Length: 205
Image (cartoon, rainbow, N blue to C red; front, side):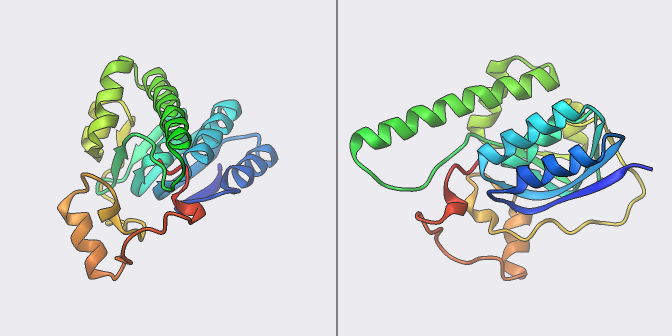
């Protein structure tokens, strides 16, 4: 029986440390359950490295794996999608202010992060980096079957009850499916404009 780790909600500082400690304590098979809209891109990259290093992690996507949450997902030895789950990938973004030079430095850092993550997706899916980069630029949403078809996942788990997606204000994304926007409005997940000074909105992917 494999050990279980649940990655739910926003990915914030410290999540990768908790996953690293869990994987260190469980050297055998591990199942990582993901239902997350993403968050801190650097935390996502750190989790991807931990999953790759461990080598015996399987992922079950429940509800959604978006943005930074897709980085540890693609690093798993097997990715299983719930039939109602979705995957989304896009370019990293950042909120904040500063001088022109500071903003140019931020943009340059984001370009490097985008290139690094595109290479990681390409390595794990077999797609050319340019194709991955185009999908990221467009903000690409995939159903469970599409994720398997495009090699972001290995198979769809059939005959399962619907899973609720993670609570999040999905209108913050550029191209969210209308169904997710309606779901967020129905459940009161809409909170207004993001706070550019909050840690949650820094290094978001």
